[in-house]
Amino acid sequence: METLEEAAERLASTTDEFNMFVAGAKWQAERMYSEEDLRQAFKQSRQCKIFEKDMPPVYNKFEEWFEQFKKK
Image (cartoon, rainbow, N blue to C red; front, side):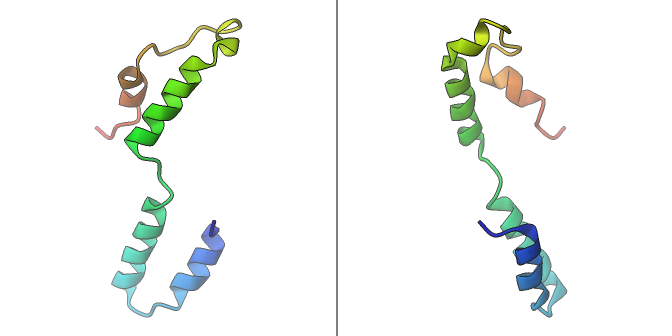
């Protein structure tokens, strides 16, 4: 996976500021998790009963947990 520094060096060769901005936004978007990725991770974490012995889950449903990260 390309690091931020590597991406900056590669994008610095782009002379057009708008194209550099678009390329940077695309680079960042490719590293973000989708809602479905997060839903699957939440589901898998709920299946790990070993942690529930020590600490009960804070959120019972994915939607409750995910709501806190949505932009308002």
